[in-house]
Length: 424
Image 1 (cartoon, rainbow, N blue to C red):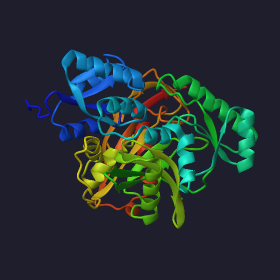
Image 2 (tube, helix red, strand yellow):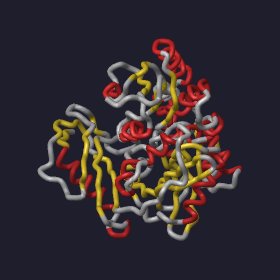
Image 3 (spheres, rainbow, N blue to C red):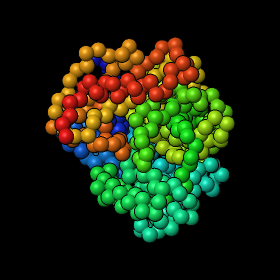
Image 4 (cartoon, rainbow, N blue to C red):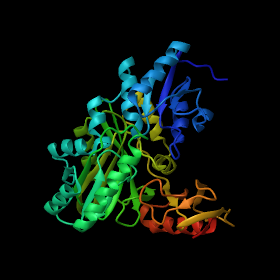
């Protein structure tokens, strides 16, 4: 048994037990020599397997999160040594706990200016001169049509406060704008209580026609900013913007304008701690445009791919930054190959069976099926909820130009066809 060197103090992590973020737990245990604690809504949460204590409460509600932490202190005498957010719902609750105990954290203003409030985020970016599509906040379908006509078609309609492509649609006509507005409103009504989202606004944005999309993982700490990796995104079919795959390094890795734009965006938002997730659209020879600035690490297994390609864990740097124990700059190792992840998608209908493939392609390092027989598979992937699993890839010694990015989508489609049996 490893003896704690942290006394009666523990590390509170929020979001580390989510699918495709689990290696955040490994990194937390490497970085902190003491108990690991999280907050879950119910005792039957899978988090109980990984943590020394699971506090039962609402991880997305700042008042409830602070309540359960204070109750834990009253019962045990233990207090947090640090609070580390790994997903959007934990950002404000994490701030509430850190503020109460005087722990290192992002400012409340920086949290509120990030992508959890896309309207505020865009106001800040535009005021700072950071390139990002203009937007109009709208309160009705009629207002949405008027905004779309002022920008020109196509345009993007989205909720101001959700991630994972929830409620986001491209609209090419006034009728499509109305349908997209109603769709976004339904998403907000259905999901806002689930994640304690208080921003129920909808916005219409200019459509950025640049063809490529990347995510940039950037470390900010002690006045230092450092891009750790640039990842190519693979998007599903329009009118949605669902992310169906990621691959690192990107064909755009090493571009100075990507680094400059990302750092400027993070500084404008006020992010000065941890690893941030910034999404850009760009093209060869075209200046990058910022789509979102997330005040937390990436989801969808992106950080795992960075670790596989580069041999270091951004999660660990993220934890150490929130503990104020990070030494910067970090070493910048060269990539030793390509790493990627793609979703598994069953055909539309009722899943009747999940089978094992006869063999796996040599590039496949692992896969996981999240769907079960009897569940319904949606016809399209509109957001992160419309998937039936994922598969990870590795090409040791290969560079982005060596392997077409569509290769992993082909392999994912082949694996999906072997795994899922569907009726209807």
